[in-house]
Amino acid sequence: MQKILLTMMALALTIAAQAAKIDSTQFVAFYNYSIQTQDEEGQDVTDSIRLALLVGTKATYCTTVLSYNKDGRASQEMQNAFIMHHQNVLTDLEKSEVIVVEPIYPNRYETHDPLAEIDWALTDDTLTISGLLCHCATGKLYGKQWKAWYTEEIPSSAGPWKLRGLPGLIVKAEDSEGIHCFELYGTNNEVRGIGTIDHPEYQQLSRKKLMEFKKKTLGNPRYAKEPTYYVAEEPDDLGEINVNGTIYYVANHMLVLQKSHVYKPLELE
Image 1 (cartoon, one colour):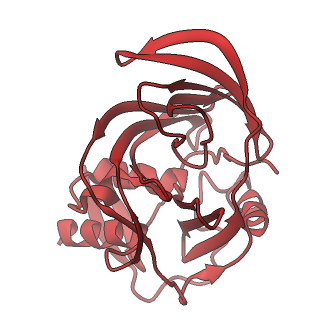
Image 2 (image 1 turned 180 degrees about the vertical axis):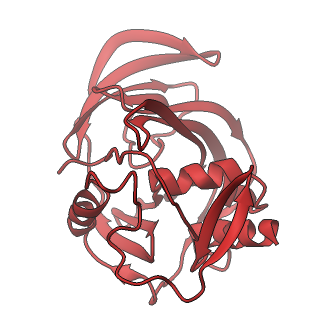
Image 3 (image 1 turned 120 degrees about the vertical axis):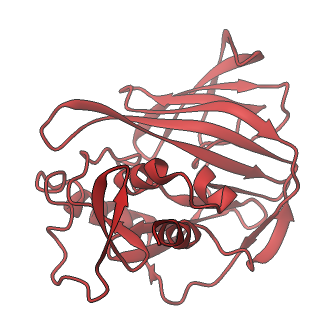
């Protein structure tokens, strides 16, 4: 029963397999994504999750490795995915549009926004990461300053999340506060489709409206100790699962956490 529930949640996180195809992957890049945050008692903790970036010539799609594999086995990562409120990000280069799907209990949200161009400043600094010669660049996106290391050995302008636009694949990127960090740990030449699908049941809003909602609700000091404080009614389909000895509630194919970690936004403006 636990595996069935986790599989259903994993499928709910991704753009569906029957999506309208707009591109095929040249390769898939895998990243460790870590966040320096605090638990409900204010103690420093590091949350981490693996991401899969599907890279095509016309589009890219960033999701969790859990959703990429669709096997429902990574229960600890599923927990972290909900704690960190990871976004599924589809970048349509031909339309210069970014589509984001994000589950925030008890709803799922979808945003459509113009592709943001990052004004990167290239530097002479170099670093070898995972055997790849990387060059350094700095840039600002949605109010956060980023340092990125990219490699021309993989000729793609792609990167994790919404980071992109350099003369090679982004291998590592971290914000100036040292909170968020993406780091490449592997690539795969597997060919997969990249596509879109209509979600009429999802709440449609702008990126800024979603950012404001998250700041108001997830950024509230009550959130870490009581993650559902802002939900008016208890769901009718509330159930329980045991994940590594910890009891979690499940509703609407989402984990309903009893306690969470402090929200650390990726976007400030």
